[in-house]
Length: 268
Image 1: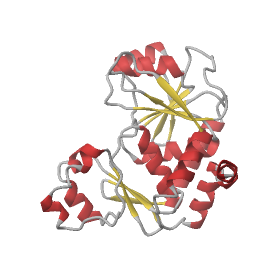
Image 2 (image 1 turned 30 degrees about the vertical axis):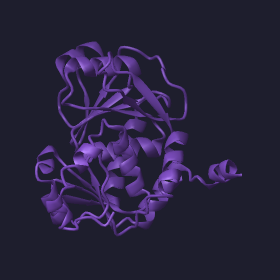
Image 3 (image 1 turned 90 degrees about the vertical axis):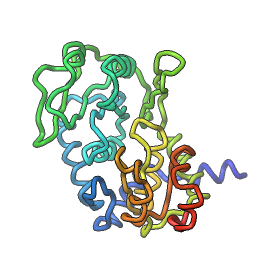
């Protein structure tokens, strides 16, 4: 009974996002480096990226790489891929080139959306065109090395293990996986439109996507931390009036001591 009920109660991910963005278009969806962007701002950016990709010879099962720091472009690109139902893989610019090559070789993204005008030379030589296409301030690199579709349909995104025990391995996360997570998490995490949710995760970490979707599906505001913010996390919480905290236990340990407990910083 409970399994059947759970299955029929899950919302379609794309519809969930579209409904939320339509309802909350004027509300703040994202805050990065003190800059605030509305749901409408993020949607228009995703639309601009999607129009550019639709002009290309896209293949539904081929991932799209997102090569960007914790930036507006990265979040807009993620939303674009979710709405287009295109799998994506995050490529951290801070990764060593060898790791980036390994990730690209495993998942073979058809395009890389980049906030930078150039990629590392070894990536361009081995995988991508030397003359990327520019969409205003966005750069799109087209893959040339392979046309193999390595993933089946219904993949939402691909996350990679840390590789601490060997070579990093790509783990495909399906749309159904994400919808199940959102359904289960919404039963224990009660986010409201007025909430301000902290994003402490790097976009290469799996829970970063869960945090984004939990926030945006409820019309709440996502406040993204940078490395410098973690050095004074209590100031970030106070300044931005954070109400919902997500993190790994080690990050939580920065505020869970007697000095910070007295401040009553968080409601959740």
